[in-house]
Length: 317
Ligand SMILES: Nc1nc2c(c(=O)[nH]1)N[C@H]1C(S)=C(S)[C@@H](COP(=O)(O)O)O[C@H]1N2
Ligand SMILES: [Mo]
Image 1 (cartoon, rainbow, N blue to C red):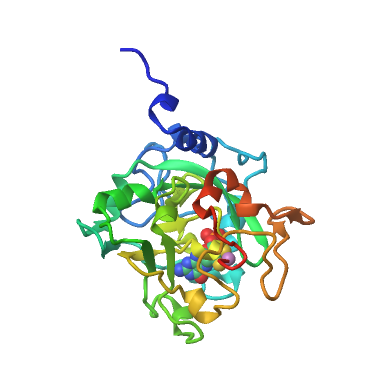
Image 2 (image 1 turned 60 degrees about the horizontal axis):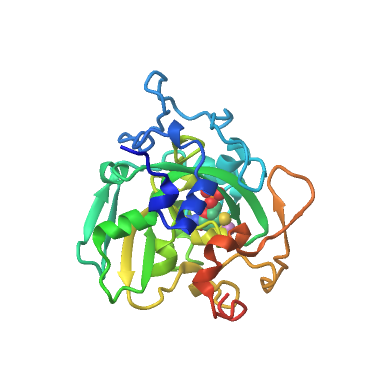
């Protein structure tokens, strides 16, 4: 049989974005990254799964994103974190999250769907895992380049079959103050909640990440499964998800509830919309000196600008 080129069977924009963002896919063994026992495993069965050494730089084939910017070191990605359930101190999250129990774990998917389903780790393993090199731009104006491993959220959503009433997706992080001391801090209305419009959630760039740098996610990065939406500020990429609901109304996120004048629902990276307390025109790339310009939609405009056609992005920030 004649070999069919992927561009012939996939809509071109999808094909192009996959080609641009999938790297080293062959190196990722499907399902190998979500370990049942919670101990991160390595890709090759001949290597011994070991307690992660946060100082070792795991090997991935890619060395840069599609713009040519180098990956942020594994050490920085796993030791400089925002995960307020543990602490607001970025450098202390990794230590405090060390004993976080990520197995057993389930993600309950329901709401306006025809086939509600509770996924366990093995179920999530069934979705083909791929590597995606994405920029992560925090609303605090620092950024990283991270080689994630995961599967498109659209795959999971197709599985539960959203009804025609479903317009938004609402995500929830685990609530367990015994394990997550930051949740005893009543400044925030726990659990952490985030949301996307259904078409944003179905976009090919929207990833459910189960790993990074070719290893299972460490707790500080949102193990065992977290969202990654690369064209939005980092706070949209909710960690350690236990619940996903398809809903009709725009969900209220933890950050919208905490400070609606500072954090909107869309939270698209936009250098021309300042945070009330600082400018968003530039950012500090972790591991670099100096600052670099912040790109509209974090550099993913070609892929995602169409989602917001006709919208005033200054009002819908
Ligand atoms: N549940 C939860 N998810 C979260 C956060 C959080 O505090 N709690 N912080 C967000 C913010 S502000 C950022 S910048 C990213 C950081 O992800 P990383 O630590 O894996 O780089 O996670 C996001 N997801
Ligand atoms: Mo952030």
